[in-house]
Amino acid sequence: MNQHKFLFLDERGQVLSTKDHLLRDDLDALDAARKLYGDHMIEVWHGARQIARVKIGDEALSACDRQAL
Image 1 (cartoon, rainbow, N blue to C red):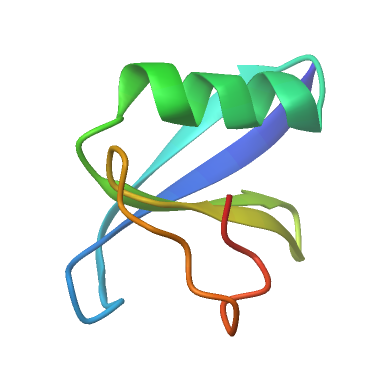
Image 2 (tube, rainbow, N blue to C red):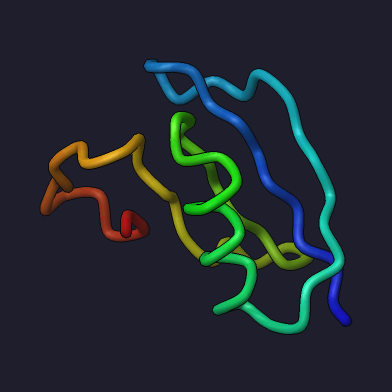
């Protein structure tokens, strides 16, 4: 199990809160972010490495946001 940090962001990208999760791997972390917190914009981190930014619901992705899923 690996510790992943979820950062909950407001509409300007400012961190509102954080939550740690013990998950098997990065794919499980992304799946958990989408399923558990689908109504928030979240950054998923593993240590100092940003895995992705998960957008709110079905919000369109921006081509300039390279971390977005």
